[in-house]
Image (cartoon, rainbow, N blue to C red; front, side, top):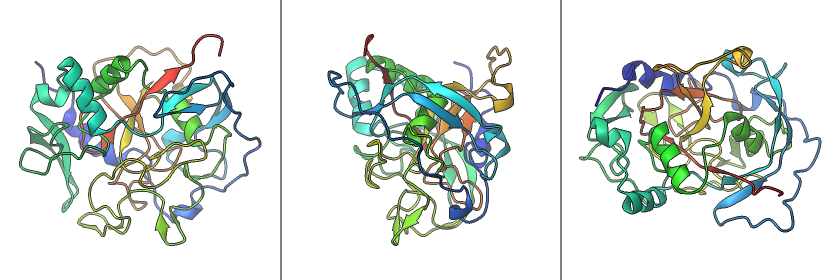
Length: 316
């Protein structure tokens, strides 16, 4: 099987491109009170365990005038989103193991024989031999814990899981709409205005100075946390910032080119959303609602996972 397309270039992009920026977190965007409340689900809609209802409606994607963000988060644009269901949390190691046990599926990292991870003492990325979803930092490191997000998952692996589970990956517009509470809340984070509240971190991100000094002030030093550990958004979603970046179904394109003709090539990339435990405001503020990252579909990283969406039954 062929090697990944330009993998070493993507190692840097995985942290550096998505939602980079500097400055105090509270200054990233001015909070605006939602103009409406999220609509309740239809009375006859059966919502599966582990998923939440995301109402449809208009939403503004990206950063607007007065909001701070990266150039590829501009220009902001209006989108109309249909209602859908979204996994409450990123897919866990335990859920992915059930999929593998049921299907015999082999991930891209297993086929290639390596996965990408960062040396946290230097900030340098490398392909680690035999790193894969069971042992995301390599076979000589501790195995992935069952209630943590599964990582070292390529886009193609995430797509395969969601299809098996009866769903699909969300688009990046759907992901941001859900993160904004389906009410176009302009707070910088899915949970509100502040990364820390009453001395309590609202997400698993890099604390301290980068690289080499993640203090673990959020309770987790240099790695993932059990899903749901930092509470829920108003819609009932967890881990919509920090912990792991999440694959979406969308091809990466600058927003000002979104309506132009597009044919994917071997080097085209899929969008990731949400930031990760490696993000720090000084170099990667990826846990903001509008932040974007991207990588080729076969790329696997120790800080990237996913969650699935489900379309509503016809007539709902």
